[in-house]
Amino acid sequence: MQVDYYHQKQNVYGNIMWGKELGKNDTTHPVNSIQVKDNIHPLEKFRSLGYYASCFSEGDGIAIRDESEQKTPGMVADDIISCFGWDVCIKTKTKVNRVRLD
Image (cartoon, rainbow, N blue to C red; front, side, top):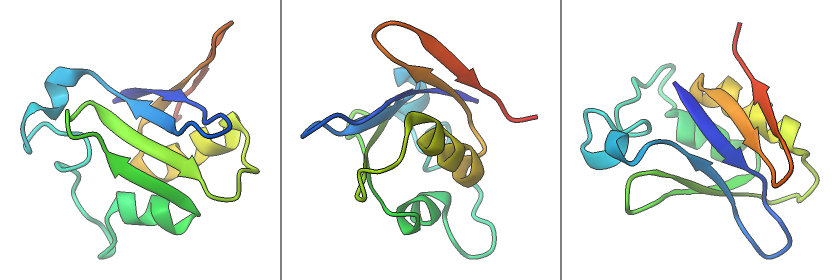
């Protein structure tokens, strides 16, 4: 699955976004439908890396914040990939950078 990532800015959370249709029920919701491995949910693993993370009530993404405020967009994308296994498209105002699992 591919997600779009918008990096946090001063006083503004970052966002991991996917299509709204996916979040309409628990069987298709990208976070709720994850099979838990090693007794730790990927969202908890992501939080353990120093992120605040909360799913949008609308079901179309996750609000995130790197608590250290030191991670680059690429570092956050790598953490998303390692925790969730999703392909990440880093979104900026001027360009799009794609990061894929191989």
